[in-house]
Amino acid sequence: MDDHLKTLFDAADKAAARAYAPYSKFFVGAAIRTSSGQIISGCNIENAAYPAGTCAEAGAIAAMIAQGESKIAEIAIVGVKSNPCYPCGACRQRIFEFSDTATRVHLRDGATGEAITHSIDALLPHAFGPRDLA
Ligand code: THU
Image 1 (cartoon, helix red, strand yellow):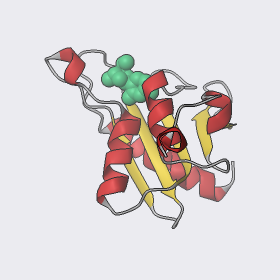
Image 2: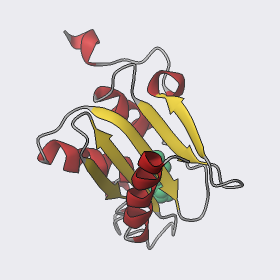
Image 3: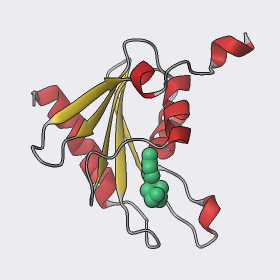
Image 4: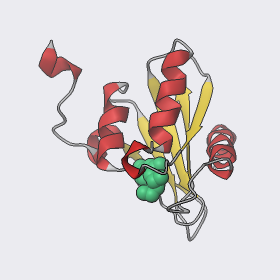
């Protein structure tokens, strides 16, 4: 894995280690590299009222928007217990909103530790998106 990807996975791991997931105990971290090169991370946060919980990707995207950024160049997603940790359907849609065709989604291969990389288009083909509302 090259250094720039390792930096992104390190940020995702750090966020995953801080995840608040006392109910599922499935700790997830996500780290976005924005189009300007900033790295912004998030973790899943569960709630005693279960549906109120939020995914790691949603947290990272919220932090990105709060930082005034809106383009995901790449995103790394890691689970503490299980890898690859593929983004759920809702998070694929969330990522798509802030992506373009060059955006890359990186998971970690649990067996080798290497990155598994997909385009967002491969993960969410024929997506409904901002263009449909234009
Ligand atoms: N989770 C994420 O944070 N991201 C995903 O894409 C999949 C699921 C979290 C939500 C919940 O806190 C836990 O993993 C188990 O579903």
